[in-house]
Length: 572
Image 1 (cartoon, one colour):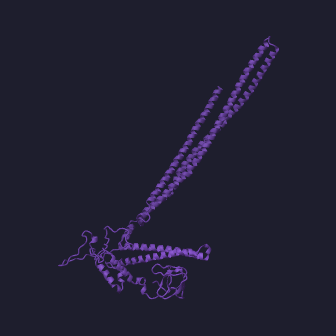
Image 2 (cartoon, rainbow, N blue to C red; image 1 turned 30 degrees about the horizontal axis):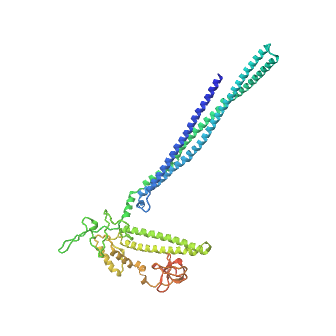
Image 3 (cartoon, rainbow, N blue to C red; image 1 turned 60 degrees about the vertical axis):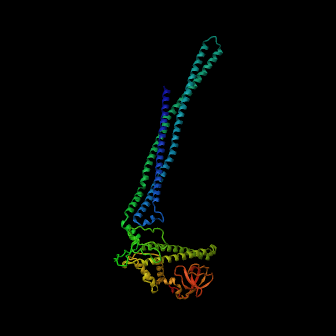
């Protein structure tokens, strides 16, 4: 009966360990499944952020494209701001992914390793305790069987002694031997009894400790482990929500930025930008005069009876044989789209003026960059001259020469474009002008350009509507007119001006090859006369003799001005 109860207890304990082992294993699998869920959510956030960034990048205006030019409109700028906010919005989803990885996935992965090790340790202790109690029970059973066997042997030895003692035919020696054998068996039975009693006491103590201390402690540890696991999962779920909540303020700011960008759109401002961008500068044509029919007099015919752009003042061919350029009338498609000539003469006056001014501004920026590089190299050269161990001053000279030539080349381009700009600005009418096209260049001509003025007047008369026409002959006349205006006389008619007085001397410290027009070649150490000092453009005007004079880079000469000469000269 006792053995059956012991077997039931051990079987029950083993079953409990099996149940706990299955439950704790399922708990670990749940943590692993939740970790995988968070990992997949993190990957979704990363991919979503990547797609959002690619979308924002895809619709960013391309450099040097029509989209970049359209950024002057408030609607386009608002869209650009929306794209930038969207890029920041994508960044917050990247933050979510990073926080999920660092605060949940990494932490749960470490915790799973610890949890598996702790679970393994507890079940190892449980199996060890179970094996120990089973071993003690086996020892108890072995001592019990040995005690029983020794007792039976002692009884048989006693019975044999008694038969021998009662038998008169048995010798006295045999009786004594039987008696000693019976005593020995009784002693072995007594020793087995003592051993059995000791094992029984020991087993009862171990059994009591096993069922009341060891196993409950192991179960308690497993329970605490399971509770910590559940608590840890709950904390991870809370962190999962907090990770999203932390980025909500910044996401809200991104959305506010998009809303603010949308509210910044100004339709009227954009429409004014369109007007300013495509304003042609043309004046509306004058009224069409009545043409009476007379004998022997033909009435003027138009090139096209269906197109207004070709019907007014454009049927007449120019003496040069070129075709006149018609006015860009509203709602008529311009077939001359493209890069066009360098002077933008294919554009309407106002658009041409803007393009020329933009080119001049770009050239001035390039000149400033070159000047900055020149100043930096000049300072470097000065440092080398004072400290030869740092470098050779002569190594800077080729670069300085190259920069000087670049500046000279860009300045010539600036002069060319400024001439075209002056031509356009002279043709553009002011608000106070009468409704016909006039040019300040024509009005400022002196008496030597009367012929040019008459030709220009004829051109204007050939266009009754006052439209802007261009051709090779008119461009040539304009250039002649520009050359004859007072502000260009000194620049293009250097041969007719008086000889400039000498204001000092200079010594060439470097050799300079003056290949460009207006410059003069000098050799190192050559002495020259200064007739015009540097006006801030990096050039000094010098004279070798009565016939040879020109410009040299100021950094290539050492100037010695005469007293009171500085500032006496003016720009030519």
